[in-house]
Length: 409
Image (cartoon, rainbow, N blue to C red):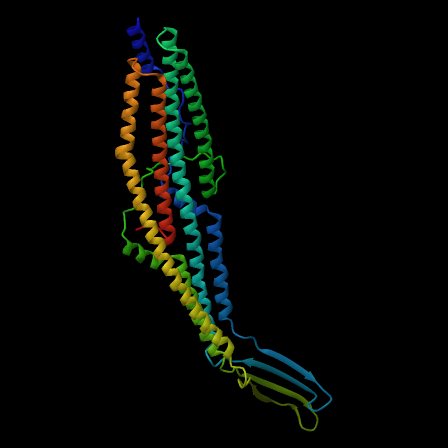
């Protein structure tokens, strides 16, 4: 009778249907990370706002290209001549207009920097949301498998109890294990909904929009060494590029300040009229200019020099910070990669084998259901830790991309 009962329990373990499955995915083709990035870049509101900043700076270039307007004056007096019509035209002879245009064009390059700053934020947020949803899918699938195993274990425990081959304690332990598995599955499903809302937010979609993603949590660009990473960061880091651009803008502003020391003459042409017994309409010509005797932009030029020195010092400090952040990010990536490999190649296979042995032992009546449930929970915990290690790996990659200021190439 005991052997018959054991074989019946084994049949239930092998043939009982799974009781939980992940929710169905969207009918649309699943998104890869690159496809999601392209979609987010085309919809992201912050990026769109940064792109509109270019139009504002282009308008400033048009302002810099404008010529000064002439001044028209008319005067009527009791003295002779009784009327006088004048027109004045300032003419810049120190190249101020050309330097204003150069300054505006240099400031225009800041628009590209604004866009790259938003793109850096978008790439980081998308990497975390995209791989967060992949991890949530895996957690839900894992929770479904654990729930199915717990249900089969509960059925076996009940069958053995009914046959008198197992104590009531096994049934209670199996029921408790199934209740925990159910709660874990519901939590995994809710967590996936939250992860989906996070991805939709980055994609600028309604939070409940159904999105399917495809990829591997272990996806990563080719590994790079420290010198290569520093080279990329020097060319793309937002703080370093910003300091370079600010220094270039201030150099242009300094050049304009120096040009403004050259006075701008204003040529005046006049038509004096109605001078009885002398002339009806005469003519006059004149020139006026400010003599740079006391103020020659000395303070402004000194301030510009100081600003350039400050920007260069800030850039040197920023480069040192970037070097430290790149070194730390590479170290974290290497550590996370080793941890992922350890879980994939050693820890998960060992936990899986232990669970298989526990199941076989329970089928043969050599151990209690508690040992089986403990082995199942251990395997579940190990797989959860593996998923977290993969997420930490992606976070480390996001940290490196953020420091570099662009994709890792």
